[in-house]
Amino acid sequence: MPVYIVLLGPPGAGKGTQAQLISEKLGLPHISSGDIFRENLKNQTDLGKLAKGYMDRGELVPDDLTIQMIRDRLSRPDCVSGALLDGFPRTVAQAEALTQMLAEFTGRVNAVPYINVAEEVLVERLTGRWTCRAEGHVFHEKFSPPKVAGVCDFDGSELYQRPDDNVETVTRRIRVYLDQTMPLIAYYRQGGVLLEVDGTKTINQVGADLLAGLDKMV
Ligand code: AP5
Ligand code: MG
Image (cartoon, rainbow, N blue to C red):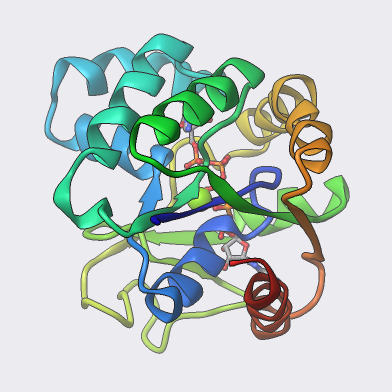
């Protein structure tokens, strides 16, 4: 049976950072909805052009488009053993659609690590973040600096600051998270698959806590 893991947490909690660490360990492809939208934008596809306005404002791209995009991605051959989802689902409608599509793939959501970080910490994390142009690897100027400033340790590509990582848009993204995504914590807790970890510890410690918790669940 395939294994599906959903990383949940506010913007800047460390979903992408932890996915980078654990996807290889678990042998699951890392699927980030935000990265797929940014890739579409880079390639100037219709989906990318449409998503841009929402992303720039810090709002969610409409459910129907996002659900279809994830369905297409999960249908690809590299997901036959499952996937590590980062940034999807983000609304109850998306969570319900995910349950339905995974049933079609004879799977289910096996575990939902929830990376819990207080709101005050998020702004500093996001405004100091540097992201790699090629693959979306993440760094932080203070907490996780690259070996050479402006260059990705993993693939040598240029690091840039995401246009939605300014204080105003970050504030909006956190608000949207509180309104639309927070209800998923109760949704998955009720389903018995929530794994809460303290996201304020060091990057390596959070990773160790996640792997230890997942070991018991998948
Ligand atoms: P997306 O790209 O998913 O952004 P997000 O959810 O806002 O999350 P982030 O990527 O900002 O944070 P993260 O948790 O991955 O943190 P990271 O590991 O980088 O979405 C962007 C936009 O796309 C959305 O606003 C929306 O418009 C659209 N979208 C995406 N999915 C959608 C969906 N399902 N439905 C509708 N619209 C959707 O870490 C952050 C920083 O902190 C880094 O610099 C890192 O080095 C540092 N850091 C990480 N962990 C630690 C630690 N433990 N200690 C110290 N520093 C740390
Ligand atoms: Mg991310």
